Amino acid sequence: MQTPLCKISPSILNSDWGDFRGSIQMLEQQGCDLIHLDVMDGHFVPNLTLGPDLLKHLSKGTTARFEVHLMVSEPEKWVEPYFTDRTETILIHPEGVPHVHRILERIRELGAKPGIVLNPGTPLNALDWVGDCIEQVLLMTVNPGFGGQKFIRGMLPKIAQTRDWLVRKGIDATCPIEVDGGMNLETVPEALNAGARIFVVGAAIFMADDPSKAYRDFVRLVTK
Image (cartoon, rainbow, N blue to C red; front, side):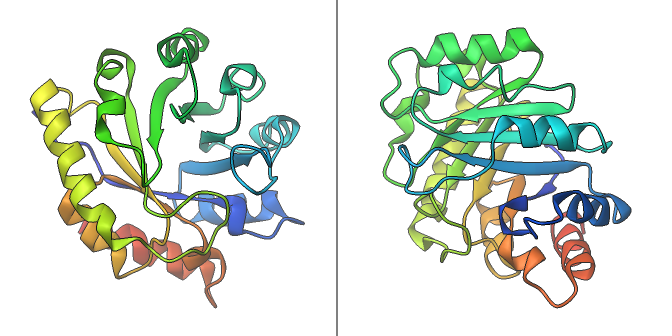
């Protein structure tokens, strides 16, 4: 089976909130075609961020695709509002959701890829009964809620175990592992070696002296 291509998915949570479009245009000029949108509702996580109208606005002026990470209570209410013709993936958390399978199927019906997100303390067996309807697994390597946190190094074995689980299910080529939290030039190679293929990078790009160069440096790191 072919190994999924590695990608950097910049999180605009850490970009200039007064110029989201400018940040996305800068990334597009560097060849970026995937943008990470962190959606927080102040309930599931202790922060409040980006609403669906912003995604609709940004979708009209870009050729990039978006992956929408729903860190929200009752995600079934938010799947449709966050779907646009630029939405590639919608990722939900299974913690506290009674009908995970139903939500994942609805995401696919809309035309997006369904994905599952596991918090650091969520066991891998949360994947056992949804493996037939997921196309991406996002492992949080920090506790979600705020950008710029320090990578939890204890998550490296979890990445490897997730890779092994996907191999056993025979879906490792079609269901890449994504990691989110504390990604920098040191931790990305570690996560890559453990089996991750998509890397959410926020602060390390947008808070760099030269964000364009920072993005290119990360791309070279995962595609060399």
